[in-house]
Length: 237
Ligand code: APR
Image (tube, rainbow, N blue to C red; front, side, top):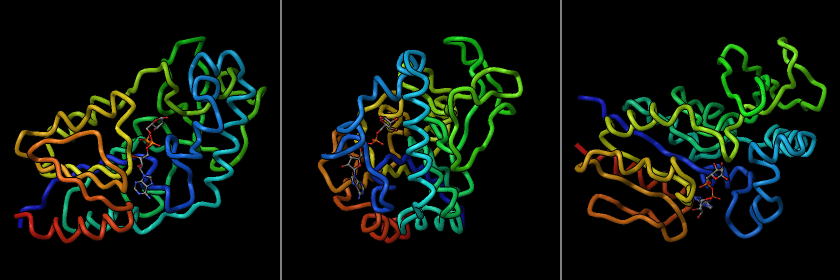
């Protein structure tokens, strides 16, 4: 049987049932913090200590989080399909659940890298350091002597892996979207790159902002919705 190519675009909602807050739900992260202060490149250069502390807190929170069954179901699809996860999440729960092909569009919370000049993001992957759940503070320097910063795509920065994500979605047989408000570009526009006959399934307990002939809304949480999707994927020839 020919393996189906499944692209899975995820957002904070896939990690909600692991206890990690989403951004825009009531009580979400952006209710507590101003993203321009703690998650933008200008905010970082205005107040490095505040931003470093914000990511230290989120890294510490991540250390206690475990993948939920939605992460595990997504990973398990690799047994019979070619699965690429394109996530907006900076947590490592897809990898912890066993997904082996994960594209992090917005960076990775457990990783840091040197600041290479102001507003200059010419870093290479080999300079990226995995600090796991440890703190990184002002004065913590990279081998090249510059301050270590979160390996996160801040608001106002380019999304280096967007082209790779576009290629994956343009080539997939099925597109599954789980737990994203589709409100931050360019990630929010990725679904448009699917072929016109590619079925698109969107798992979200709330109403979704996109519609169209090949878009199917599974109105459920990630864990419940994945159970339903696994049944659907079995019927797709
Ligand atoms: N299961 C599935 N989806 C859920 C669940 C759940 N248990 N709980 C909430 N959701 C849905 C919400 O209805 C919403 O559509 O998850 C989505 C979360 O949306 P956001 O909080 O906006 O998160 P996300 O779409 O990932 O944000 C995108 O914005 O701030 C930036 O870089 C940040 O990557 C993030 C990007």
